Image (cartoon, rainbow, N blue to C red):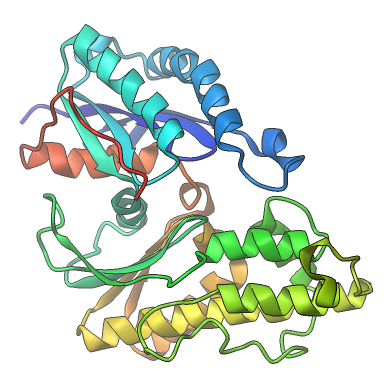
Length: 342
């Protein structure tokens, strides 16, 4: 069987990314153009700013990819692109570019679910990952649990098990960091501040666990941070905490989010008799989460598949990996491929 060479594009939020993979595993070339500096002044991602940045660097990035991989367009097997979920305008930039290239180069087009791509990143890290397994995707826009039953190579193989009832974990990190005066992006800032804090300083450990025993909820935790940090004046009030207070709040917040993600994910794996837990998404880069997941999974004799840090945040390697599995099962999309924010 001939090698597959898939060029993938990722533009679902605020990173413009591209990659070329051979046979779904060998990375021939990749790039990630971060927009963190563009959005820092606003304390969060501004959709229009993100879209303009995608338009400026996507096609030059693709040109550089081909040169770096020493691949001609005619040598590609397919074009892949994230088409859901994400910021709708940002997705449209990537999908429109992928459609144009697929048409110009006469190559098949494959639309990839961004969340399934995050799970594929875990598979890249652990090739032995096998169904049935539970997958946790924790990112700026999502906190979801899925069950993979063995049909995950084709579409429809990931069964939703749980999600957040309100804010996603990554979104909560960003909002908490802003309330604590730590800046953007929130995940790394909270993690750094938490190193010198007391994770038991505030009684928030179970705040991310709604009483349904299945899903996540982080809006109440965010409100608790706001009350401690800003008082009754809310998010517009002055910061009421000193340096140690900020560290303690960051550590207590982080501990609550980590506890919710770990406890719900491992409980889902046990309920579904899954031998593996796969983890993906930007929040999976959090060192405390990785530490707790490793310990809890080992204690329950559940194997853990988690990507290296570079493949936790949005990237196109994971999109190409997922597209390879779809391509191998005959999945193809037409040029009327639609985007979806959710």
